[in-house]
Image 1 (tube, rainbow, N blue to C red):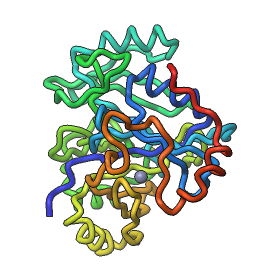
Image 2: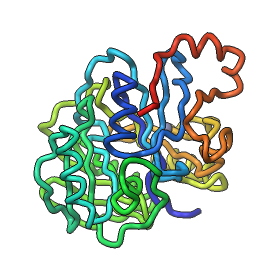
Image 3: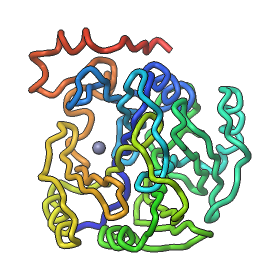
Length: 309
Ligand code: ZN
């Protein structure tokens, strides 16, 4: 079995789909790579943002429920989602976020990297992390010049009331503890993108509450050949993973981890180009086959979504 090289995608809850689209594509410069619906509630979009080709390790996905109640970021959740940028791009992003009216505070150092912290329109905590020798990646064509573009994920932080059991899960996945600063424990694996998980151990933080501006789950990359073996490993840790579920663009196993955070293990293939060609990604509503015969009804029940910029 191959060690897990990092994050596959991160899925969050939002509110207004138009604001969500504008923030992630115009302000952050990601590409809308998939436009689908929540398979459990087809009146709600499922929007995917990523690099040009939607590579594993780059896709941030949202269920934007119009008028959703704000949630509360707290223990048992992914508390911050971190994107990787080149270290030289920090000044560009300080200016870009300021011009967009996003309150980002001053860049600061953490574990030798430069961190810029801010929130999305629903209050979801985000960080841009400037690293030396950033991978070139496959930046989207968009408002952000390729040299400064977000490459994909850097990592996530998990807010926990105690960390031991989650540390065991990460170690089983191939992550190694590489440092700590204050109440922040850092784990890393061997990948270019999404290779960091930091555990924030703070018994005084309130429990997280789902809602707009909170993360639903974080997915890690596995190969199709290894997925069933990972599932077994999770069972041996005393966790209760789901069966393998076909999500069309990848296959998924989910498990609630001991600290309360929902982890997913998603295959790298077949990927977002399985049902659309690369140039047309995200332009039209795509539905799994079993919803295709309801397309007219589903489309008329969705809010309009302007991608004219
Ligand atoms: Zn997922």
